[in-house]
Image 1 (cartoon, one colour):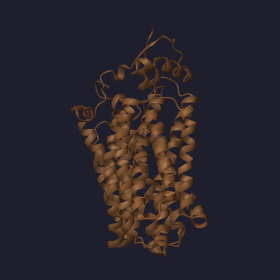
Image 2: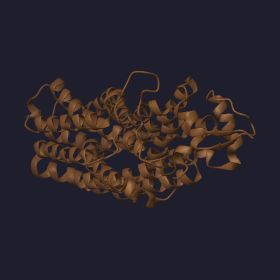
Image 3: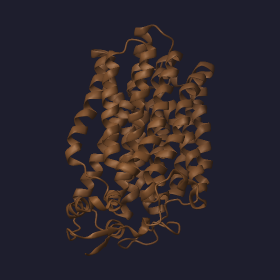
Image 4: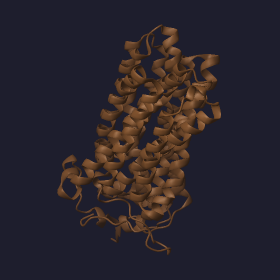
Length: 452
């Protein structure tokens, strides 16, 4: 029986078309996660008018969904490490698809909050397992790009939510909007039930699934004997336990990542949840859905540009630069009377500020996936994201407070302050993705602590 080190095969192997297809399939789940996540923010101005309630009444509704995402991220990360990333990911997709469809039948704020909480379980659960899958399908030198490409689909989905909302809401209303948003992930989930394989590194830890692993490696272009035995030397010492995140080797990074996610998600979700309402209330001559799209599309562009730069210069310099740019952008918008500015100027300011906030958020997932080994990778990413969800929950109330007490100016100063704290937190991370030392094949240096 031939022994095969799956870690070496994958990390030092080629970057095949099938691997790219798998990353794309994983990314599709996150696009729809991003769409369903931000539909409520698009719909709130219409619901305020139709239901005759104050905009502040929706703060608990937004918070309930984000609490669900916090719980879902933590639970699904652990489930993914124990029962498979594929199972946990697709389960999350079906859950948020069904619950988004259920919003069609809601008629009051209370029931909207209840349904949104359960939808949040799926919305939060998809990300840690999609991140783990994307990172474990590909060679080590392409891992930051694959993970960032997957996570960047959150703001891409938000962009689509804004654009689709701008078209559907005026003509068909909010119920059709949520119906479309719920059906699409259900259709995708059915397709991926047959098309999406499990993580090869997860399969290597399950002896009874080694024949499945041998078949998958063959499709990835690595032909191994059917009766081969498998191991993963890089992950041999790792164990699946939340406690592993706080051993001396990872403690500092776990705390710093948690703080980074907390403050960045507070800024990002304050933006996407309240931006359409803020633009409507400020009297800006701009469709609120287009404003949300601009806030998100900048993040797509920023993350796509930032991912290869991280691969070349490392994550520390790249991410701290993006944070500094976000702080500057938010401060400039806070000092600008946006109600009197041309629509193109407002869109440009929103794209810059929201872009750098979202680009920082999405690349943080690649950083978290780098910090932790396979056995606790989904748990580690899920825990960081779950702690960040506390910040996103607070964003529902912080955003409402800023708008009520100081309007657009205070709202963007809140974003600037949060991103300044993200800068400090990311600077404290010890094991950043390193820079490339040379230009040769395999030049990407994935420097990892001893025992990884």
